[in-house]
Amino acid sequence: MKREIDMCHGPLLGNILRYTLPLICTGLLQLLFNAADLVVVGRFCGSVSVGAVGATSALINLIIYLFIGLSVGVGVTVAQSIGAGQEESTRQAVHTAVPVALISGLALTVLGVWLAPQVLRWMGTPADVIGLSTVYVRVYFCGMIPSMVYNYGGAILRAAGDSKSPLLYLSIAGVVNVALNVLFVTAFDMDVAGVALATALSQLLSAALVVRALMRRTDACRLDWRQLRIHKRSLLQMVRIGLPAGVQGWMFSLSNVLIQSAVNSFGSMAVSGNAAASSIEGFVYVAMNAFYQTAMNFTGQNIGARQYNRVRQICRVSLMCVAVTGLVLGVGVYLLRRPLLGIYITDSPEALAVGMQKMLCICFPYALCGVMEVLTGVLRGMGASFVPMLMSVVGICGLRVVWIGTVFQYFHTLPSLFISWPISWVILIVALSLTYLVLYRRLTKQALEVVHE
Image (tube, rainbow, N blue to C red):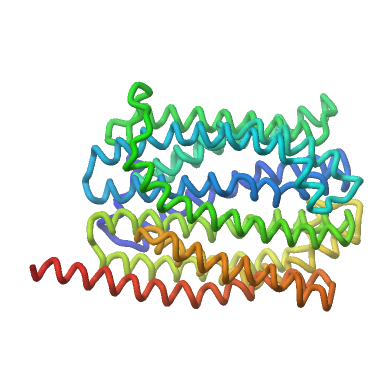
């Protein structure tokens, strides 16, 4: 059965939905890596261990997002080369991406192991969880090389129109992860170190499967270990698109570290409640992010093929789909907030109350986050990565930092902290919409000038 979807021809709605559904499932499975960690330690080790794992998420994202952003550059570079029919450029991008992934993974391993205790202390992590948090982060980062290989390799497959294979490989790895979680925690009494080790080993498996898939391809995306080298042109294009995406993710994570630090000031039960709510919220976000990846790759291939009118249709259909999905999932998760939080929190009414407060402020308006993600994806697919990054840094990260120093300091309540999310989404949507209109008109004008020449 053919796995690739033709992004440049055929009905958009059907192709977008068929492409996005495996992405959503892939994102859900990636979240299950961390969710399984939280559930297992919550059931067998207690709320302190849940807080220890939950307190690390902002730190982990802060360290890895700069390198994960480069996978965005990989995907757009490959997609535009495929759309333009440039096989040699596609091959060079593929064989540049893998060594960059290996180097990125090694750098992340060193950074994570070295910086973990210092940054956790700087974040004000409660004393009763910081020891376990440090252990979790250090073991977790030992799996960064395979994690980067999976992310970069998966970006190549998705850029080629294959969103199903990464899902299949992550499904296999996800089952292994859950099984190892239970084994290491219950049989070997390893606590948070066990769930971190399980995650690292499952990432190794998913990376091996992605590499195997790339080596078995018969098109320009086929991986040949003998041809691995960093091609300057491909690397520069990946960096031009991916680095701003990485900086944006890093700044998002930095603002979330500041928010996590503010949450930490309310004690370990607040940390546990926030961690549980964030995990549940993440299951909604993966759907929003899946439409972002879809919009980016569909736009990238059609920009390469110079089909600008189809780009406008991609934007319109993707926005419609993500708005409906975000509304249904966001409201649905909020209505089920108590039983969902109960999966994570079994011994603290205080932590449960904090989780419910966060879900009220963030889950209801989550469709706004989806609209923001799709607009960002379309702009990146068009090759514009710096402008969305700059807008995000100012409109979201800047606002959240100012918010913490003003509104939150005045009220000093958790709801006054959480409400900064939807407010920042609205601001960025307006800015991204204006940028898209300007850039699209510029591209169509240039296309008309070429035709008249």
